[in-house]
Picture 1 (cartoon, rainbow, N blue to C red):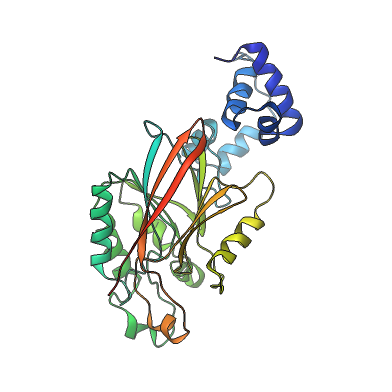
Picture 2: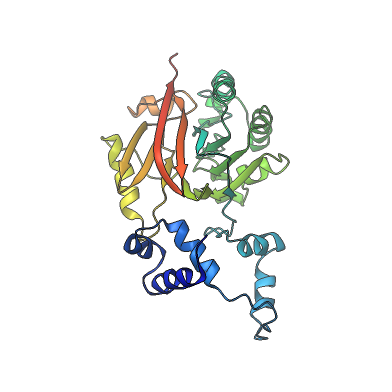
Length: 317
């Protein structure tokens, strides 16, 4: 328990230099700084609220759920979506990570999905994270229909919904560039609308979404850039693009269909590969596809990741 005097001292340093710098300066964790700042705040519940119209503006802009999320310390991402905050029992967390399923395209095979869920059950996975391109989408390219197993967005969304319903493990998911073809052409958010009837699945962002797991920040990233000759180069450039104090603890990337684990600027970064096989377009353009999924095991103590391992499970035709 932090004394009020110590909490006030920590809060004063934090107010001057910010959470991260205060933690480093005082030799304590960022979460300890946050707790101290909360403890330092005066508890004057009877203080009158200023009547300057701010609260009416907030109610007009945000839903009651979003306001409740902010009141409980959950940030909203740029799309206005509350950042999920998850607290698992114990220090060990086991997470299944997939990306680029491209449901509806001939490169996707249901056996890949079933094998992934079976391994999640064997490994006692507590959470599944999906980094986008859930669906193949409809690009309006004349030749695309020859590569589809589910023709039309409705068919693809129904197929995806049935697959997601095969497990009760909580799933957090973002959309990718293929999912967003519907957004760009007619404002259809395929992933957001697909998951709405599923209580255990949550859409957390368009292209980028993040969540907090036992006090650590995890970010899902899809992107619309291309592959690089070195698998690590893309990851390095993404991490370099983060502004000061905005780096996540864990970065999980999709889009390129390449897999790998990298530790860069104190960020645990995983490139997810793809839960689909190499498409005809990838073969024609000489782009490799690393088909498979990851099981991530992390030990989190005092809002710090003290051990992190990402095991890749490859598939071969």
